[in-house]
Length: 172
Image (cartoon, rainbow, N blue to C red; front, side, top):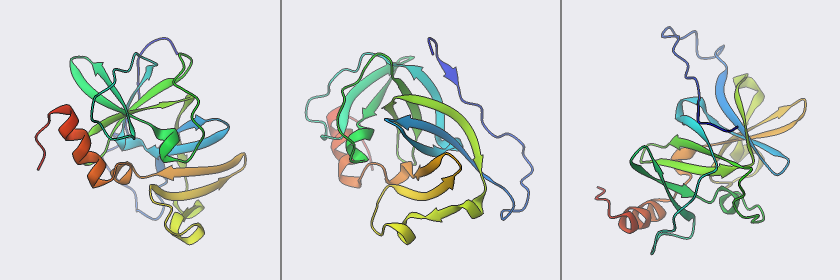
């Protein structure tokens, strides 16, 4: 992808019954594994950009990017998921998303796009691997397992505070 792409949001307005409504996700690939986040949390996909380091930021932070005049922290999704470091290459993409506390970007090999997954196909992570942390659930798909992540738990409170201090932000 050579230019910025907006990720469409679900704007239906009328919600069908919760038990029949599928989960709306954005999936992405790291190495050969597929991951996903809630579609409502995803903002946009960017081509890889220069990441500026931030002194005294927590180890999970790779640095920041400037997105239309706003400073967006870039976090190391590979480290968080326990994957080997490969460096940030120009072929990758940045997925910009927001948690309850902040906007973040994370480098991925490829954003695969929006997808729907039946709620009954998702197994809570604690039922499979107790204490897995940022994984909200897993879904067995025809082409492999999809790990669904919770961005609200991606950064620990301590990491979020350290990042805010390094960026000179005032947080409550």
